[in-house]
Length: 488
Image (cartoon, rainbow, N blue to C red; front, side, top):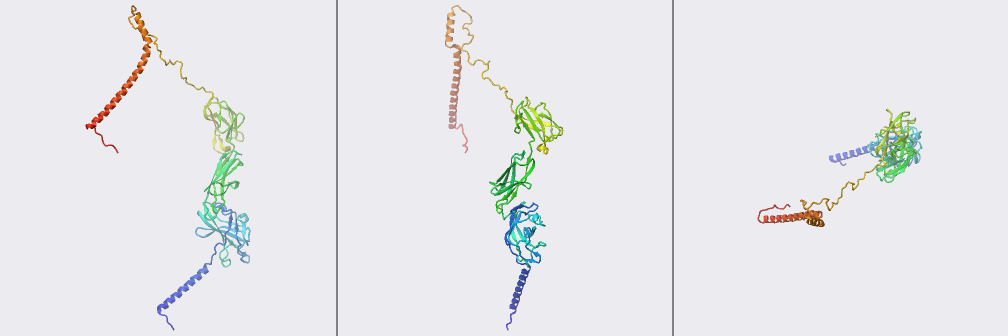
């Protein structure tokens, strides 16, 4: 018989213990953690988007690609009820919907299984605010549960934990089917936002990113007003059927591909539909444009709405002291001045009729808005006003041309001696006159004097310049002048 040495004996015992320990651990794990199966397929959600703050966050319908388990124990089965879970960020599951029964038993692939509470008596809808706690992708799991207490089947009856799965991407309050879809945002504008009944109101929804494709549904509350297809980031819809009153309109974007783009909804915008607060009409009762241009002496009709029924309103005109009649509001709160005349002395520019009663001004939007008391218009400049024109040559302007011959000629002989001098005086005077004597020669003398002065001034300047140059050259040669180095 072979006897093991002490060291070898000890090693063999340790190895046997290690193998025994591994076996025990393996047995414990396999007994306490049965094998868990992955998803057995993908279920579909229609529509593929929604909002977490809706009364039922996940609504519409779903379809399953296969059947529930055939297992049953007496009256208990696991093919009549469906339960929808959301997998939280920590990996734990939370119930979203429990008690989906509308098309049970689910013994084959089934489509269009309604998620409406009316179709599923006893349906339990959970609030997902504490389950979905931020943007990202979340997994949904759909299981078959028993028809008594809606519990999952134990592994001994339905092994492998079978379920169908789907993923949704959450952005803010919106969710969309798919993983990693690009989030979108939607804004809405209404033009005009203040319209009269029957007038066209254009609703424009702008989708960002502009590359997103799909459709936009325009709604007032739960009422669908219309739809538009997104093109270049915009969808439009026009309506003329909005009744009188206030309308809070919104828009909802549904992507063409939920795997590519996320759904989004615009903040509501308000559209007010009311008759005009006031109208100015001409003498033929034709309505004029807003703030029309009126003429002095023109007769108009003024209709003002939103006034206090039965109240008399006085009338004035801004910047003018003319007297105007009063008007009493009828039972509908409409005050009418059937004839108002623009004063002949009205000042040009912007003006207004002003109508008031003590503590009772009229109100916009049929009496539901802010108070107002003016109806504006403009006045042009008066026609036919004289325009002063300056004359180029006033009547009293003296002649620009001097006379060649003064009216009084001085005598050559102041003594007045006429004897023996008549011939000489006559001859001298005649000679002076015939040579264009005094006057012509004098004018020529002034021009000649100016020319001479200019000539001498030019010659003098030239001489001074030449002298300056010569002085500088002489000074530099003899060391009298020195200059610093030139600046770089």
